[in-house]
Image 1 (cartoon, helix red, strand yellow):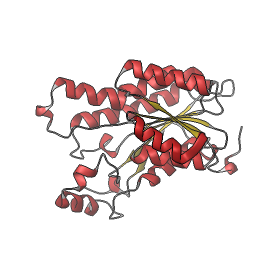
Image 2 (cartoon, rainbow, N blue to C red; image 1 turned 60 degrees about the vertical axis):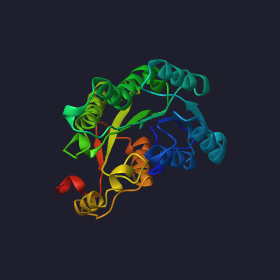
Image 3 (cartoon, rainbow, N blue to C red; image 1 turned 90 degrees about the vertical axis):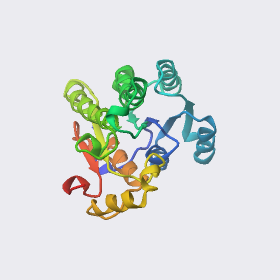
Image 4 (cartoon, one colour; image 1 turned 30 degrees about the vertical axis):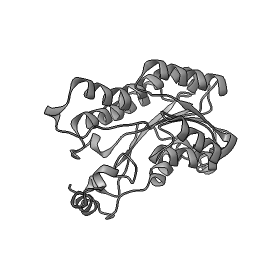
Length: 259
């Protein structure tokens, strides 16, 4: 087993990062590449993928896919098989939200949020399990949210999808745990609070709400994508070799306070 004193070294690791061209996903792709990993980044916009791969070089390749659609997920799995054969790290980051009261949700809106935020993660975990088991001390890190734990005025479908991510994390951590007889897969999640990303930009545009969020955060600021990426990299690295089933808040202390 790789010793924990290797710290956050991802040299030679093969990673798949969904939602990889913006916000937390882009920061994660950039950090993984800087730490020595080879990365497949998934996003819906080909121009964004082209810009990312041009900037980061041969370590990063892109797959254009909408993970709310089964055929696109199949194409991503095929790309992982073709480029890597085996996989060391899966980062389920892709996410979306439709902010409105529960009573105003249309059935197709609810389905879309759940498909993108949760179903895609479940399907990738399930279908990529054989390649992860063939990998090197493999791990899964999924991006949840503090909304999985408490009301954040983000919309109940979004919160439910993130709570489902955390429960899937706990369940797979037990079911797929490494043992003395099998390599297994470590499975963890991170729970960001409000992070300075395009997804949160509409919320921050309301100055009163932005002030309320900062006041409710003990560190009195919103987080940066690189701060969540650092937690993802840690959980993916040999330094976290005895951590599985954890949901790590990256929230400036928000879960300790009141919103």
